[in-house]
Image (cartoon, rainbow, N blue to C red; front, side, top):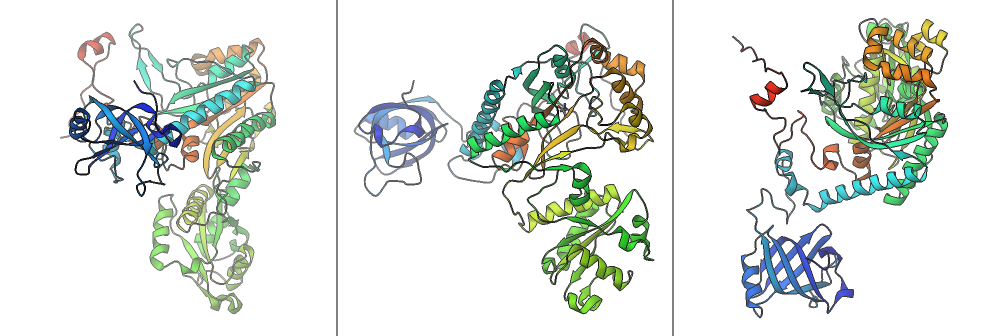
Length: 590
Ligand code: ASP
């Protein structure tokens, strides 16, 4: 139906008869001549229709924004003085001779020919219109380029794309499963995959050697942060490769892709242990663009009378950390109060600080509500340890280590963002040497990565000291976002049994839930490991978007609904009967 895309015409087409199809982006009637800006996914071309072609003119007169039309005409130079250097097609226009209205449009729910702030709910309800906006189209285009790049790269490295099932048994990956009732097996349910983890490991047992899949994954979590109930992973697994080799190939893929698609040279990714990341940045996904660090000062406050500090300073599971903000004394009381409220979200009971006015004057030159509680000597030692200078502000966190890390870690990122302190545009890193387990709050342990991750210690060490066991897991982090995570897996039945034992998963439960994997370990399982990238987050970062919803064609809301299709919806009683399901009425209050 068309000879060219609107966005592709330029001076090389002058004099040619062409046919364009697209949407009327904007229509202007200049007394006797009608200008139509015609838009397709490639761009916008200006079409001029004059009364010399009365039929076309009458149709152009009836056309409205977002009508779909076909135009046949000749490309010509725009008259002098009307060239638009900001438009790729701005030097030319099409003199429209024949015009056909292919489809009409009601008045759009929001204008597309000018930029207006539109509420996200309206955008999601009319997502098909929202996606017409060039910035949204561009995001999808970049997403497509990213997935092609990844496929080409992995294909060239000998990876095989294998699909794994969507209808599964529940896997023990920590999040809540989405369940699908079985019609043929009354009372039984499939679970949608939280990731293809067990299948990709089984593919290694089968000898596939190098696998990848761009896989949809489903997790029924409370969507506090920027999460989606269904999201996409670039899922990778390899045999006979250790963590260094896996990190090397995946890092190379990301670096080459940034160079190719964004012309960005990422530096080599530094590696940092989990312990160091927590200690210095309070986070296992440190944003290394921000030049602020947490500094331990426990030892300087062990003996002070002020319990708020001495309590945590003397407790092995707590910490007292200082965060120096250069030139921070410009912050107003109100700003400090706001930051105090902010850290409260992470459980901090307060946000102590010292303002450094004139360090030469000792404590006299300081300003702080806590100075009356701690000896001058301790205060000065802290300032010297963090390298404080005049004009600085030093914040403190004193609590359980988890609270201090979360609160000061988040404060660090917020300060960096609010005060625009970024020193690099891109700061990637690997975080390695994660602990195997964390306390589950009920006196037991949960796996930090997943139960199939290999520890870096022996079976005996794991059994006797699970708290200090490290895993062979690694996360790729970019600008404070976890891009991907993976691990070397357990390929030894005894080690797998020990991990399950530490996790308190009985043999019966393990056999019932994933006995097939445990069995497979008995039939010649190669050493293997892999990693999964969160594609949505990767695209979000690469397109400079501020939410993953911006880079998913049809995303769900924070409460896991689709505003456009109204999913989830009710189903009729026949369908429910077939599934042997009866809906229990919610008991009405009162
Ligand atoms: N399956 C893991 C996840 O979804 C990634 C991996 O270990 O490869 O986090």
